Image 1: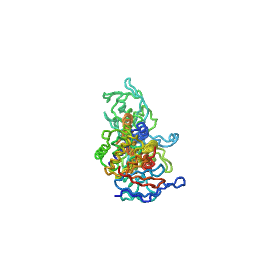
Image 2: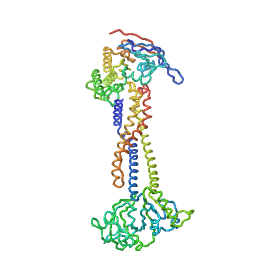
Image 3: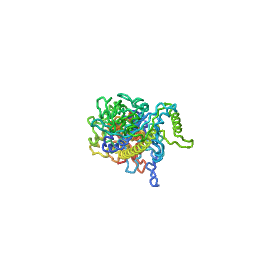
Image 4: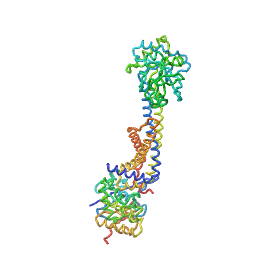
Length: 403
Length: 229
Protein backbone atom coordinates (compact mmCIF):
# COMPACT_ATOMS: atom_id res chain seq x y z
CA UNK A 1 0.00 0.00 0.00
CA UNK A 2 2.78 2.42 0.98
CA UNK A 3 4.67 1.19 -2.05
CA UNK A 4 1.78 2.06 -4.34
CA UNK A 5 1.43 5.42 -2.64
CA UNK A 6 5.04 6.21 -3.41
CA UNK A 7 4.68 4.96 -7.00
CA UNK A 8 1.65 7.17 -7.49
CA UNK A 9 3.57 10.11 -6.12
CA UNK A 10 6.40 9.52 -8.60
CA UNK A 11 3.96 9.06 -11.49
CA UNK A 12 2.20 12.30 -10.57
CA UNK A 13 5.48 14.20 -10.29
CA UNK A 14 6.57 13.06 -13.72
CA UNK A 15 3.20 14.05 -15.14
CA UNK A 16 3.37 17.47 -13.47
CA UNK A 17 6.88 18.11 -14.78
CA UNK A 18 5.91 16.89 -18.24
CA UNK A 19 3.45 19.79 -18.51
CA UNK A 20 5.43 22.55 -16.82
CA UNK A 21 3.63 25.63 -18.10
CA UNK A 22 0.24 24.13 -17.48
CA UNK A 23 1.18 23.01 -13.99
CA UNK A 24 2.63 26.39 -13.06
CA UNK A 25 -0.46 28.25 -14.26
CA UNK A 26 -2.69 25.85 -12.37
CA UNK A 27 -0.55 26.12 -9.28
CA UNK A 28 -0.73 29.91 -9.41
CA UNK A 29 -4.33 29.87 -8.20
CA UNK A 30 -3.38 27.77 -5.19
CA UNK A 31 -0.25 29.83 -4.55
CA UNK A 32 -2.36 32.99 -4.37
CA UNK A 33 -4.81 31.23 -2.08
CA UNK A 34 -2.12 30.04 0.29
CA UNK A 35 -0.40 33.43 0.31
CA UNK A 36 -3.68 35.07 1.26
CA UNK A 37 -4.39 32.47 3.98
CA UNK A 38 -1.00 32.90 5.58
CA UNK A 39 -0.80 36.67 5.17
CA UNK A 40 -4.28 36.98 6.64
CA UNK A 41 -3.30 34.94 9.66
CA UNK A 42 -0.04 36.81 10.03
CA UNK A 43 -1.84 40.14 9.82
CA UNK A 44 -4.36 39.21 12.49
CA UNK A 45 -1.76 37.84 14.88
CA UNK A 46 0.27 41.00 14.27
CA UNK A 47 -2.78 43.13 15.07
CA UNK A 48 -3.27 41.10 18.24
CA UNK A 49 0.29 41.73 19.33
CA UNK A 50 0.06 45.47 18.62
CA UNK A 51 -3.21 45.65 20.45
CA UNK A 52 -1.94 43.69 23.43
CA UNK A 53 1.08 45.89 23.90
CA UNK A 54 -0.96 49.07 23.45
CA UNK A 55 -3.52 47.89 25.95
CA UNK A 56 -0.88 47.08 28.48
CA UNK A 57 0.20 50.68 28.14
CA UNK A 58 -3.29 51.79 29.11
CA UNK A 59 -3.64 49.30 31.93
CA UNK A 60 -6.60 47.06 32.55
CA UNK A 61 -7.09 48.27 36.10
CA UNK A 62 -7.59 51.91 35.23
CA UNK A 63 -10.92 53.72 34.96
CA UNK A 64 -10.97 56.88 32.88
CA UNK A 65 -13.59 59.44 33.81
CA UNK A 66 -14.38 62.13 31.28
CA UNK A 67 -17.32 63.80 29.57
CA UNK A 68 -17.40 61.54 26.55
CA UNK A 69 -17.57 57.81 26.01
CA UNK A 70 -14.67 56.43 23.98
CA UNK A 71 -16.91 54.48 21.67
CA UNK A 72 -20.24 56.11 22.40
CA UNK A 73 -22.68 57.29 19.81
CA UNK A 74 -23.65 60.54 21.56
CA UNK A 75 -24.03 63.77 19.61
CA UNK A 76 -21.26 66.28 20.15
CA UNK A 77 -23.63 68.89 21.57
CA UNK A 78 -24.91 66.46 24.18
CA UNK A 79 -21.35 65.86 25.30
CA UNK A 80 -20.65 69.57 25.24
CA UNK A 81 -23.59 70.24 27.53
CA UNK A 82 -22.33 67.87 30.15
CA UNK A 83 -20.66 69.55 33.11
CA UNK A 84 -16.87 69.59 33.15
CA UNK A 85 -14.79 67.24 35.23
CA UNK A 86 -13.35 69.35 38.00
CA UNK A 87 -10.12 69.01 39.93
CA UNK A 88 -12.00 69.10 43.23
CA UNK A 89 -13.28 65.61 42.40
CA UNK A 90 -9.83 64.17 42.90
CA UNK A 91 -9.72 64.57 46.67
CA UNK A 92 -13.43 63.82 47.09
CA UNK A 93 -13.15 60.54 45.21
CA UNK A 94 -10.10 59.61 47.27
CA UNK A 95 -12.03 60.42 50.40
CA UNK A 96 -15.20 58.51 49.58
CA UNK A 97 -14.00 55.55 47.56
CA UNK A 98 -12.42 52.55 49.17
CA UNK A 99 -11.34 51.03 45.85
CA UNK A 100 -9.55 54.00 44.32
CA UNK A 101 -5.85 53.37 44.86
CA UNK A 102 -4.74 56.42 42.94
CA UNK A 103 -6.63 59.28 41.34
CA UNK A 104 -4.88 61.44 38.79
CA UNK A 105 -6.42 64.41 37.00
CA UNK A 106 -5.10 64.78 33.49
CA UNK A 107 -5.24 67.93 31.38
CA UNK A 108 -3.83 67.81 27.90
CA UNK A 109 -3.01 70.28 25.15
CA UNK A 110 -0.62 70.83 22.33
CA UNK A 111 2.38 72.99 23.02
CA UNK A 112 5.67 74.01 21.55
CA UNK A 113 8.81 72.71 23.22
CA UNK A 114 12.12 74.32 22.60
CA UNK A 115 15.69 74.30 23.74
CA UNK A 116 18.30 76.54 22.20
CA UNK A 117 17.49 76.46 18.49
CA UNK A 118 15.67 73.14 18.63
CA UNK A 119 11.91 73.23 18.62
CA UNK A 120 9.13 70.66 18.35
CA UNK A 121 5.37 70.58 18.75
CA UNK A 122 4.02 68.00 21.09
CA UNK A 123 1.37 67.15 23.67
CA UNK A 124 1.84 68.28 27.25
CA UNK A 125 0.03 66.80 30.21
CA UNK A 126 -0.78 68.40 33.52
CA UNK A 127 -1.32 65.93 36.31
CA UNK A 128 -0.59 65.13 39.92
CA UNK A 129 1.76 62.87 41.81
CA UNK A 130 -0.60 59.86 41.51
CA UNK A 131 -0.14 59.82 37.74
CA UNK A 132 2.73 57.34 37.72
CA UNK A 133 0.49 54.74 39.32
CA UNK A 134 -2.06 55.03 36.55
CA UNK A 135 0.38 54.36 33.72
CA UNK A 136 2.59 51.36 33.09
CA UNK A 137 5.52 53.39 31.86
CA UNK A 138 8.52 53.70 34.15
CA UNK A 139 10.92 56.51 34.82
CA UNK A 140 14.32 55.54 33.43
CA UNK A 141 16.25 58.63 34.44
CA UNK A 142 15.69 61.06 37.31
CA UNK A 143 12.36 61.01 39.14
CA UNK A 144 8.71 62.02 38.96
CA UNK A 145 7.59 65.24 40.65
CA UNK A 146 6.65 65.13 44.32
CA UNK A 147 3.42 66.12 46.07
CA UNK A 148 4.98 69.36 47.14
CA UNK A 149 6.11 70.25 43.64
CA UNK A 150 2.62 69.40 42.47
CA UNK A 151 0.93 71.64 45.04
CA UNK A 152 3.31 74.51 44.66
CA UNK A 153 3.08 74.35 40.90
CA UNK A 154 6.81 74.04 40.51
CA UNK A 155 8.13 74.47 37.01
CA UNK A 156 9.49 70.97 36.60
CA UNK A 157 8.78 68.44 33.87
CA UNK A 158 9.15 64.77 33.06
CA UNK A 159 9.81 64.23 29.38
CA UNK A 160 9.25 61.31 27.02
CA UNK A 161 12.11 59.40 25.48
CA UNK A 162 11.47 61.02 22.10
CA UNK A 163 11.96 64.55 23.48
CA UNK A 164 15.09 63.49 25.30
CA UNK A 165 16.50 62.02 22.07
CA UNK A 166 15.61 65.12 20.09
CA UNK A 167 16.96 67.69 22.54
CA UNK A 168 19.72 65.98 24.45
CA UNK A 169 20.83 62.96 22.46
CA UNK A 170 23.26 61.06 24.60
CA UNK A 171 23.65 63.89 27.12
CA UNK A 172 22.13 63.84 30.59
CA UNK A 173 18.96 65.99 30.55
CA UNK A 174 18.37 65.99 34.31
CA UNK A 175 18.56 69.47 35.79
CA UNK A 176 18.61 71.13 32.36
CA UNK A 177 16.00 73.63 31.29
CA UNK A 178 13.64 73.47 28.33
CA UNK A 179 10.98 75.94 27.27
CA UNK A 180 7.32 74.99 27.04
CA UNK A 181 5.48 77.72 25.14
CA UNK A 182 8.39 79.98 26.09
CA UNK A 183 8.16 79.23 29.82
CA UNK A 184 11.24 77.65 31.34
CA UNK A 185 10.85 74.22 32.95
CA UNK A 186 13.49 72.10 34.63
CA UNK A 187 13.77 68.51 33.44
CA UNK A 188 13.64 66.15 36.43
CA UNK A 189 12.90 62.79 34.77
CA UNK A 190 12.72 60.80 31.55
CA UNK A 191 10.06 58.20 30.70
CA UNK A 192 10.90 54.82 29.31
CA UNK A 193 10.58 54.36 25.51
CA UNK A 194 7.09 53.20 24.57
CA UNK A 195 6.68 52.96 20.81
CA UNK A 196 3.46 53.77 19.04
CA UNK A 197 0.02 53.38 20.52
CA UNK A 198 -2.03 51.07 18.24
CA UNK A 199 0.60 51.88 15.68
CA UNK A 200 -0.95 55.29 15.28
CA UNK A 201 0.83 57.95 17.32
CA UNK A 202 3.95 58.00 19.37
CA UNK A 203 3.59 58.49 23.11
CA UNK A 204 7.29 59.13 23.44
CA UNK A 205 7.04 62.77 22.48
CA UNK A 206 5.36 64.14 25.55
CA UNK A 207 6.06 66.29 28.53
CA UNK A 208 4.35 65.92 31.90
CA UNK A 209 4.05 68.86 34.29
CA UNK A 210 2.47 69.36 37.70
CA UNK A 211 -1.16 70.31 37.25
CA UNK A 212 -0.67 73.41 39.40
CA UNK A 213 1.88 74.79 37.01
CA UNK A 214 -0.17 73.71 34.03
CA UNK A 215 -3.26 75.56 35.28
CA UNK A 216 -1.38 78.69 36.17
CA UNK A 217 0.52 78.95 32.93
CA UNK A 218 -1.76 77.35 30.38
CA UNK A 219 -5.26 78.19 31.65
CA UNK A 220 -7.66 76.19 33.73
CA UNK A 221 -9.96 75.75 30.82
CA UNK A 222 -9.72 72.76 28.59
CA UNK A 223 -10.92 69.29 29.26
CA UNK A 224 -9.92 67.29 32.20
CA UNK A 225 -10.15 63.57 32.66
CA UNK A 226 -9.48 61.47 35.70
CA UNK A 227 -7.46 58.28 35.72
CA UNK A 228 -8.36 56.08 38.64
CA UNK A 229 -6.47 52.97 39.57
CA UNK A 230 -8.43 50.24 41.25
CA UNK A 231 -7.43 46.71 42.34
CA UNK A 232 -7.33 44.43 39.31
CA UNK A 233 -9.64 41.84 40.88
CA UNK A 234 -12.22 44.45 41.94
CA UNK A 235 -12.87 46.18 38.65
CA UNK A 236 -16.63 45.61 38.59
CA UNK A 237 -17.07 46.70 42.20
CA UNK A 238 -14.77 49.66 41.68
CA UNK A 239 -16.72 50.71 38.61
CA UNK A 240 -20.02 50.63 40.53
CA UNK A 241 -18.59 52.48 43.47
CA UNK A 242 -16.87 55.21 41.46
CA UNK A 243 -20.03 55.64 39.43
CA UNK A 244 -22.13 56.20 42.56
CA UNK A 245 -19.52 58.56 44.03
CA UNK A 246 -19.60 60.56 40.82
CA UNK A 247 -23.40 60.63 40.75
CA UNK A 248 -23.33 61.88 44.31
CA UNK A 249 -20.78 64.56 43.47
CA UNK A 250 -22.98 65.68 40.59
CA UNK A 251 -26.09 65.53 42.76
CA UNK A 252 -27.98 63.33 40.34
CA UNK A 253 -31.38 61.98 41.25
CA UNK A 254 -32.00 58.21 40.84
CA UNK A 255 -34.08 58.80 37.70
CA UNK A 256 -31.43 60.95 36.02
CA UNK A 257 -28.91 59.53 33.60
CA UNK A 258 -25.17 59.80 34.15
CA UNK A 259 -23.77 63.08 32.87
CA UNK A 260 -20.22 61.70 32.80
CA UNK A 261 -18.54 58.68 31.30
CA UNK A 262 -16.42 55.99 32.90
CA UNK A 263 -14.22 54.35 30.27
CA UNK A 264 -11.98 51.38 30.56
CA UNK A 265 -9.77 49.33 28.23
CA UNK A 266 -12.60 46.81 27.93
CA UNK A 267 -14.27 49.30 25.60
CA UNK A 268 -11.19 49.18 23.39
CA UNK A 269 -11.20 45.42 23.51
CA UNK A 270 -14.83 45.22 22.49
CA UNK A 271 -14.28 47.58 19.59
CA UNK A 272 -11.07 45.88 18.65
CA UNK A 273 -12.76 42.51 18.61
CA UNK A 274 -15.48 43.86 16.35
CA UNK A 275 -12.81 45.26 14.05
CA UNK A 276 -10.86 42.03 14.15
CA UNK A 277 -13.99 40.06 13.32
CA UNK A 278 -14.66 42.37 10.38
CA UNK A 279 -11.11 42.08 9.07
CA UNK A 280 -10.99 38.37 9.77
CA UNK A 281 -14.41 37.78 8.23
CA UNK A 282 -13.64 39.70 5.07
CA UNK A 283 -10.22 38.10 4.89
CA UNK A 284 -11.58 34.60 5.36
CA UNK A 285 -14.15 35.23 2.67
CA UNK A 286 -11.59 36.51 0.17
CA UNK A 287 -9.20 33.71 1.07
CA UNK A 288 -11.91 31.11 0.70
CA UNK A 289 -12.85 32.60 -2.63
CA UNK A 290 -9.29 32.52 -3.94
CA UNK A 291 -8.89 28.93 -2.78
CA UNK A 292 -12.13 27.94 -4.47
CA UNK A 293 -11.01 29.62 -7.68
CA UNK A 294 -7.64 27.87 -7.36
CA UNK A 295 -9.38 24.58 -6.68
CA UNK A 296 -11.58 24.99 -9.76
CA UNK A 297 -8.41 25.55 -11.79
CA UNK A 298 -6.95 22.32 -10.47
CA UNK A 299 -10.19 20.46 -11.11
CA UNK A 300 -10.29 21.78 -14.65
CA UNK A 301 -6.74 20.69 -15.40
CA UNK A 302 -7.43 17.30 -13.85
CA UNK A 303 -10.40 16.78 -16.17
CA UNK A 304 -8.14 17.64 -19.08
CA UNK A 305 -5.48 15.29 -17.77
CA UNK A 306 -7.96 12.43 -17.42
CA UNK A 307 -9.29 13.05 -20.93
CA UNK A 308 -5.80 13.19 -22.42
CA UNK A 309 -4.76 10.01 -20.70
CA UNK A 310 -7.87 7.95 -21.33
CA UNK A 311 -5.83 5.50 -23.37
CA UNK A 312 -3.22 5.27 -20.64
CA UNK A 313 -5.95 4.54 -18.13
CA UNK A 314 -7.25 1.77 -20.41
CA UNK A 315 -3.77 0.25 -20.70
CA UNK A 316 -3.18 0.45 -16.98
CA UNK A 317 -6.51 -1.24 -16.31
CA UNK A 318 -5.80 -3.96 -18.87
CA UNK A 319 -2.54 -4.81 -17.16
CA UNK A 320 -4.09 -4.99 -13.74
CA UNK A 321 -4.72 -1.58 -12.18
CA UNK A 322 -7.78 -1.61 -9.94
CA UNK A 323 -10.19 1.32 -9.68
CA UNK A 324 -8.60 2.27 -6.41
CA UNK A 325 -5.15 2.43 -7.95
CA UNK A 326 -6.29 4.69 -10.80
CA UNK A 327 -8.22 6.85 -8.33
CA UNK A 328 -5.13 7.09 -6.18
CA UNK A 329 -2.93 8.01 -9.12
CA UNK A 330 -5.05 10.97 -10.21
CA UNK A 331 -5.89 12.08 -6.70
CA UNK A 332 -2.20 12.07 -5.93
CA UNK A 333 -1.57 14.20 -8.99
CA UNK A 334 -4.08 16.82 -7.86
CA UNK A 335 -2.73 16.75 -4.32
CA UNK A 336 0.86 17.01 -5.56
CA UNK A 337 0.08 20.12 -7.61
CA UNK A 338 -1.63 21.70 -4.61
CA UNK A 339 1.07 20.63 -2.19
CA UNK A 340 3.87 22.03 -4.34
CA UNK A 341 1.85 25.21 -4.88
CA UNK A 342 1.20 25.37 -1.13
CA UNK A 343 4.89 25.14 -0.34
CA UNK A 344 5.66 27.82 -2.91
CA UNK A 345 2.95 30.06 -1.50
CA UNK A 346 4.30 29.50 1.98
CA UNK A 347 7.81 30.52 0.95
CA UNK A 348 6.44 33.68 -0.65
CA UNK A 349 4.50 34.47 2.51
CA UNK A 350 7.55 33.83 4.62
CA UNK A 351 9.58 36.36 2.65
CA UNK A 352 6.68 38.83 2.67
CA UNK A 353 6.25 38.54 6.42
CA UNK A 354 9.93 39.24 6.98
CA UNK A 355 9.71 42.35 4.81
CA UNK A 356 6.46 43.42 6.43
CA UNK A 357 7.90 42.93 9.90
CA UNK A 358 9.94 46.08 9.37
CA UNK A 359 6.82 48.24 9.54
CA UNK A 360 4.34 46.07 11.40
CA UNK A 361 4.82 43.18 13.83
CA UNK A 362 4.26 40.13 11.61
CA UNK A 363 5.75 36.71 12.07
CA UNK A 364 4.57 33.64 10.22
CA UNK A 365 4.08 31.07 12.95
CA UNK A 366 4.54 27.34 12.55
CA UNK A 367 0.92 26.48 13.30
CA UNK A 368 -0.26 28.74 10.51
CA UNK A 369 2.31 27.26 8.13
CA UNK A 370 1.13 23.72 8.88
CA UNK A 371 -2.48 24.85 8.59
CA UNK A 372 -1.88 26.36 5.15
CA UNK A 373 -0.22 23.16 3.93
CA UNK A 374 -3.14 21.12 5.25
CA UNK A 375 -5.51 23.47 3.46
CA UNK A 376 -3.67 22.97 0.17
CA UNK A 377 -3.84 19.20 0.59
CA UNK A 378 -7.57 19.44 1.28
CA UNK A 379 -8.07 21.62 -1.81
CA UNK A 380 -6.16 19.00 -3.81
CA UNK A 381 -8.31 16.16 -2.52
CA UNK A 382 -11.57 18.05 -3.03
CA UNK A 383 -10.77 19.33 -6.51
CA UNK A 384 -9.19 16.05 -7.59
CA UNK A 385 -12.02 13.89 -6.31
CA UNK A 386 -14.46 14.10 -9.20
CA UNK A 387 -11.92 13.85 -12.06
CA UNK A 388 -10.20 10.94 -10.31
CA UNK A 389 -13.49 9.18 -9.71
CA UNK A 390 -14.28 9.65 -13.38
CA UNK A 391 -10.89 8.20 -14.34
CA UNK A 392 -11.30 5.24 -12.02
CA UNK A 393 -14.67 4.35 -13.49
CA UNK A 394 -13.72 4.53 -17.15
CA UNK A 395 -14.58 1.39 -19.03
CA UNK A 396 -11.29 -0.35 -19.90
CA UNK A 397 -12.46 -1.46 -23.35
CA UNK A 398 -13.70 1.99 -24.38
CA UNK A 399 -10.58 3.66 -23.02
CA UNK A 400 -8.31 1.28 -24.90
CA UNK A 401 -10.09 2.20 -28.12
CA UNK A 402 -9.93 5.94 -27.35
CA UNK A 403 -7.67 7.84 -29.70
CA UNK B 1 -5.47 -29.29 -18.00
CA UNK B 2 -8.29 -27.01 -19.07
CA UNK B 3 -7.37 -23.37 -18.55
CA UNK B 4 -10.37 -21.58 -19.94
CA UNK B 5 -13.90 -22.90 -20.17
CA UNK B 6 -16.66 -20.89 -21.87
CA UNK B 7 -20.19 -22.32 -21.75
CA UNK B 8 -23.02 -20.77 -23.82
CA UNK B 9 -21.61 -17.27 -23.53
CA UNK B 10 -23.82 -14.46 -24.75
CA UNK B 11 -22.97 -10.79 -25.01
CA UNK B 12 -25.96 -8.74 -25.98
CA UNK B 13 -25.92 -4.98 -26.53
CA UNK B 14 -28.90 -2.74 -26.93
CA UNK B 15 -28.18 -0.28 -29.68
CA UNK B 16 -31.00 2.15 -30.36
CA UNK B 17 -33.64 -0.26 -29.14
CA UNK B 18 -32.23 -3.01 -31.32
CA UNK B 19 -30.65 -6.11 -29.85
CA UNK B 20 -27.12 -6.83 -31.07
CA UNK B 21 -25.69 -10.23 -30.27
CA UNK B 22 -21.94 -9.67 -30.25
CA UNK B 23 -21.49 -13.17 -28.87
CA UNK B 24 -24.26 -15.59 -29.60
CA UNK B 25 -23.79 -18.75 -27.59
CA UNK B 26 -20.08 -19.48 -27.51
CA UNK B 27 -18.79 -22.79 -26.17
CA UNK B 28 -15.02 -23.02 -26.03
CA UNK B 29 -12.38 -24.86 -24.02
CA UNK B 30 -8.74 -23.79 -24.08
CA UNK B 31 -6.15 -26.10 -22.61
CA UNK B 32 -2.78 -25.31 -21.15
CA UNK B 33 -0.03 -24.73 -23.72
CA UNK B 34 -2.37 -24.29 -26.65
CA UNK B 35 -1.57 -21.96 -29.52
CA UNK B 36 -4.90 -20.68 -30.70
CA UNK B 37 -5.86 -18.20 -33.40
CA UNK B 38 -9.24 -16.48 -33.40
CA UNK B 39 -10.24 -15.33 -36.88
CA UNK B 40 -13.18 -13.63 -38.43
CA UNK B 41 -14.20 -10.54 -40.37
CA UNK B 42 -14.75 -7.28 -38.54
CA UNK B 43 -18.03 -7.30 -36.63
CA UNK B 44 -17.86 -11.06 -36.19
CA UNK B 45 -17.35 -10.71 -32.43
CA UNK B 46 -13.68 -11.66 -32.25
CA UNK B 47 -12.75 -8.53 -30.34
CA UNK B 48 -15.60 -9.06 -27.91
CA UNK B 49 -14.52 -12.65 -27.42
CA UNK B 50 -10.96 -11.56 -26.81
CA UNK B 51 -12.06 -8.94 -24.26
CA UNK B 52 -14.18 -11.62 -22.60
CA UNK B 53 -11.30 -14.09 -22.39
CA UNK B 54 -9.04 -11.24 -21.21
CA UNK B 55 -11.45 -10.47 -18.35
CA UNK B 56 -11.94 -6.90 -19.60
CA UNK B 57 -15.59 -7.67 -20.26
CA UNK B 58 -18.16 -9.87 -18.57
CA UNK B 59 -20.81 -11.92 -20.40
CA UNK B 60 -24.52 -11.06 -20.44
CA UNK B 61 -25.14 -14.71 -19.69
CA UNK B 62 -23.24 -17.97 -19.62
CA UNK B 63 -20.44 -19.40 -17.57
CA UNK B 64 -16.77 -18.45 -17.83
CA UNK B 65 -14.29 -20.38 -15.75
CA UNK B 66 -10.67 -19.34 -15.66
CA UNK B 67 -8.53 -22.00 -13.99
CA UNK B 68 -11.68 -23.13 -12.22
CA UNK B 69 -12.63 -19.64 -11.00
CA UNK B 70 -16.02 -18.23 -11.99
CA UNK B 71 -15.16 -15.03 -13.83
CA UNK B 72 -18.73 -13.80 -14.35
CA UNK B 73 -19.19 -13.57 -10.58
CA UNK B 74 -16.13 -11.43 -9.97
CA UNK B 75 -16.15 -7.75 -9.10
CA UNK B 76 -13.96 -5.14 -10.78
CA UNK B 77 -11.07 -5.52 -8.38
CA UNK B 78 -10.98 -9.30 -8.72
CA UNK B 79 -11.04 -8.94 -12.51
CA UNK B 80 -8.17 -6.46 -12.29
CA UNK B 81 -6.23 -8.91 -10.16
CA UNK B 82 -6.83 -11.79 -12.67
CA UNK B 83 -5.68 -9.53 -15.53
CA UNK B 84 -2.62 -8.58 -13.58
CA UNK B 85 -1.53 -12.06 -12.54
CA UNK B 86 -2.92 -14.45 -15.18
CA UNK B 87 -3.20 -12.57 -18.46
CA UNK B 88 -0.61 -10.86 -20.61
CA UNK B 89 -1.97 -8.45 -23.24
CA UNK B 90 -0.22 -7.62 -26.48
CA UNK B 91 -2.02 -4.93 -28.49
CA UNK B 92 -1.91 -4.02 -32.15
CA UNK B 93 -0.88 -0.42 -31.30
CA UNK B 94 1.58 -1.53 -28.60
CA UNK B 95 0.01 0.79 -26.01
CA UNK B 96 3.20 1.65 -24.20
CA UNK B 97 3.30 4.71 -21.94
CA UNK B 98 5.13 7.26 -24.08
CA UNK B 99 6.90 9.06 -21.24
CA UNK B 100 8.25 5.94 -19.57
CA UNK B 101 11.34 4.00 -20.63
CA UNK B 102 11.13 0.41 -21.86
CA UNK B 103 12.24 -0.73 -18.43
CA UNK B 104 9.59 1.37 -16.66
CA UNK B 105 6.86 0.18 -19.01
CA UNK B 106 7.71 -3.43 -18.27
CA UNK B 107 7.70 -2.71 -14.52
CA UNK B 108 4.10 -1.43 -14.45
CA UNK B 109 2.36 -4.81 -14.01
CA UNK B 110 4.82 -5.55 -11.20
CA UNK B 111 3.90 -2.28 -9.49
CA UNK B 112 0.24 -3.29 -9.54
CA UNK B 113 1.34 -6.70 -8.29
CA UNK B 114 2.93 -4.91 -5.31
CA UNK B 115 6.49 -6.08 -5.99
CA UNK B 116 9.38 -4.23 -4.42
CA UNK B 117 11.48 -1.87 -6.55
CA UNK B 118 14.73 -3.85 -6.46
CA UNK B 119 12.93 -7.05 -7.43
CA UNK B 120 11.04 -5.21 -10.19
CA UNK B 121 14.17 -3.86 -11.80
CA UNK B 122 15.72 -7.29 -11.83
CA UNK B 123 12.70 -9.10 -13.25
CA UNK B 124 11.98 -6.43 -15.89
CA UNK B 125 15.58 -6.43 -17.06
CA UNK B 126 15.58 -10.20 -17.36
CA UNK B 127 12.41 -10.25 -19.49
CA UNK B 128 13.64 -7.45 -21.73
CA UNK B 129 16.80 -9.44 -22.24
CA UNK B 130 14.71 -12.47 -23.22
CA UNK B 131 13.00 -10.51 -26.00
CA UNK B 132 16.36 -9.22 -27.21
CA UNK B 133 16.23 -5.65 -25.89
CA UNK B 134 19.04 -5.78 -23.35
CA UNK B 135 20.63 -2.70 -24.92
CA UNK B 136 17.39 -0.72 -25.28
CA UNK B 137 16.06 -0.83 -21.72
CA UNK B 138 16.44 2.86 -20.99
CA UNK B 139 15.01 4.11 -24.25
CA UNK B 140 11.59 5.67 -24.49
CA UNK B 141 9.06 4.25 -26.99
CA UNK B 142 9.65 7.07 -29.50
CA UNK B 143 13.32 6.09 -29.60
CA UNK B 144 12.44 2.52 -30.58
CA UNK B 145 11.34 0.96 -33.87
CA UNK B 146 7.87 -0.56 -34.22
CA UNK B 147 9.21 -4.06 -33.85
CA UNK B 148 11.17 -3.08 -30.76
CA UNK B 149 8.10 -1.43 -29.25
CA UNK B 150 6.08 -4.57 -29.76
CA UNK B 151 8.85 -6.57 -28.12
CA UNK B 152 8.66 -4.22 -25.10
CA UNK B 153 4.92 -4.85 -25.05
CA UNK B 154 5.53 -8.61 -25.13
CA UNK B 155 8.01 -8.26 -22.29
CA UNK B 156 5.39 -6.33 -20.33
CA UNK B 157 2.85 -9.10 -21.03
CA UNK B 158 5.30 -11.75 -19.83
CA UNK B 159 6.69 -10.08 -16.78
CA UNK B 160 4.13 -11.45 -14.30
CA UNK B 161 4.43 -15.01 -15.74
CA UNK B 162 0.79 -15.12 -16.88
CA UNK B 163 -1.21 -18.25 -17.65
CA UNK B 164 -2.13 -16.97 -21.11
CA UNK B 165 -0.85 -14.39 -23.56
CA UNK B 166 -3.55 -12.58 -25.50
CA UNK B 167 -2.23 -10.98 -28.66
CA UNK B 168 -4.66 -8.78 -30.58
CA UNK B 169 -3.38 -8.34 -34.17
CA UNK B 170 0.20 -8.19 -32.82
CA UNK B 171 1.68 -7.64 -36.29
CA UNK B 172 -1.05 -5.35 -37.60
CA UNK B 173 1.05 -2.19 -37.29
CA UNK B 174 4.37 -3.68 -38.33
CA UNK B 175 6.23 -4.20 -41.58
CA UNK B 176 6.53 -7.81 -42.65
CA UNK B 177 10.09 -8.24 -41.40
CA UNK B 178 9.31 -6.95 -37.90
CA UNK B 179 6.05 -8.89 -37.96
CA UNK B 180 7.98 -12.01 -38.73
CA UNK B 181 10.33 -11.39 -35.79
CA UNK B 182 7.40 -10.88 -33.43
CA UNK B 183 5.78 -14.13 -34.59
CA UNK B 184 9.09 -15.89 -34.01
CA UNK B 185 9.10 -14.68 -30.42
CA UNK B 186 5.50 -15.84 -29.92
CA UNK B 187 6.33 -19.22 -31.47
CA UNK B 188 9.26 -19.54 -29.11
CA UNK B 189 7.07 -18.65 -26.13
CA UNK B 190 4.70 -21.42 -27.19
CA UNK B 191 7.62 -23.83 -27.46
CA UNK B 192 8.59 -22.87 -23.91
CA UNK B 193 5.18 -24.01 -22.68
CA UNK B 194 3.10 -20.80 -22.69
CA UNK B 195 -0.51 -20.64 -23.77
CA UNK B 196 -1.04 -18.14 -26.58
CA UNK B 197 -4.25 -16.74 -28.05
CA UNK B 198 -3.89 -14.75 -31.26
CA UNK B 199 -6.60 -12.58 -32.72
CA UNK B 200 -5.98 -11.88 -36.38
CA UNK B 201 -7.60 -11.58 -39.74
CA UNK B 202 -4.43 -12.55 -41.64
CA UNK B 203 -4.28 -16.18 -42.67
CA UNK B 204 -0.49 -16.45 -42.75
CA UNK B 205 -0.30 -15.15 -39.18
CA UNK B 206 -2.99 -17.59 -38.09
CA UNK B 207 -0.94 -20.39 -39.63
CA UNK B 208 1.57 -19.98 -36.76
CA UNK B 209 -1.08 -21.31 -34.39
CA UNK B 210 -1.96 -24.98 -33.82
CA UNK B 211 -5.69 -24.40 -33.64
CA UNK B 212 -7.89 -21.93 -35.53
CA UNK B 213 -11.34 -20.75 -34.52
CA UNK B 214 -13.43 -18.84 -37.05
CA UNK B 215 -16.22 -16.55 -35.89
CA UNK B 216 -19.14 -15.13 -37.82
CA UNK B 217 -22.00 -13.11 -36.35
CA UNK B 218 -21.02 -14.03 -32.81
CA UNK B 219 -20.95 -17.77 -33.44
CA UNK B 220 -18.06 -20.21 -33.84
CA UNK B 221 -18.36 -21.56 -37.35
CA UNK B 222 -15.13 -23.51 -37.49
CA UNK B 223 -12.73 -24.98 -34.93
CA UNK B 224 -9.85 -26.79 -36.61
CA UNK B 225 -6.46 -28.10 -35.61
CA UNK B 226 -3.34 -27.47 -37.67
CA UNK B 227 -0.81 -30.25 -37.96
CA UNK B 228 2.75 -29.67 -36.82
CA UNK B 229 4.83 -28.32 -39.65
